[in-house]
Image 1 (cartoon, rainbow, N blue to C red):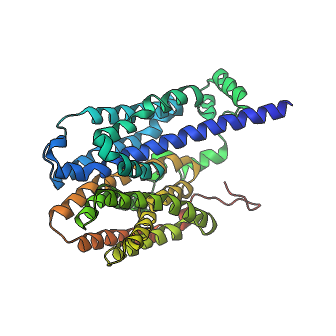
Image 2: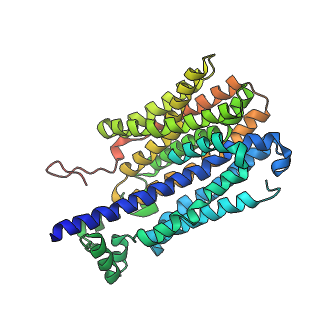
Image 3: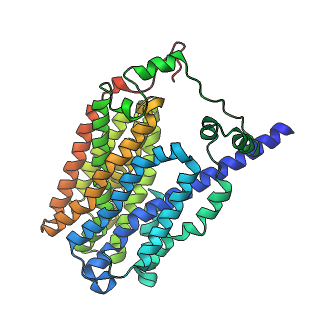
Length: 401
């Protein structure tokens, strides 16, 4: 009976954590893509927030990415200091308040991403752009209270900080065994003294500096494509002759393709390794962007846009998985933080690139060709990653650690 009760508590706690984390990711995606759903209105209606040019709209779309870059680089380190739970709760509150402030401002210049586009199709004409941003602020009164009471602190972090009593209470409530404190072994000491030192020191050691730089550039290339398209695809489709709802449908399909495409591609990556899958995804995105220039019927174009989503946003999801499995444990967190943080430079440049291409008067076909060329650069960068330095270490008996 005791084991059954323990298992039930464990399952319930894990379910709460997964649900809360997933909902947080949904709103995060909504927060970052909703701007692309409303930017066309800003360009055409000066009564909304004042006159907006493509250059101004591109700059606005990039501003948020500066904060994302800083957060991606700092969140891991801050989480090591104050705990994972506080960082997550602060993030929920922060982006909720930010969305609310955006919704009430005057004159100021994958699943969640799909949700923002879908809601814009159905609600934009009824609640306006401010209403869409108010939806993004809902976590402060929904997700945040639930996470405060239901999301526990990391047991490993509490034990490592000597807060054993708190860790014991959470372990008992969740039906988990208490982790043992980390110990320093001769093997670990030797490992850290070699080319695989911990943290950013190991990440930029002579052994890892080349793949670190290449992986960072891969991420930046992927995010350059992601934010160029998420910000400007509806506007490009409007200029191609589609109405507002039709152009937003392209945005929804783009992110839907990234969601389901990444799930399918990740299963293949588990079997054959992530490097060839990431390269193939970049190549698929490049080809699909070229195909978008063909004179296909609407249904066929939507299918192609879904493939573009796989080759852009879906590829970025695969890159994070690639990085997380590339480095050994002692530099893994730093590697993911680097990939996310440095990659945001591409995210910052994405809206600006789109605005530059549109303002320059280029034809729609030329814009898609340029984006396809960027995806080809992603293929080239992926091929440069040396798999011989992957973090998986094979030990006698065939196991990995």
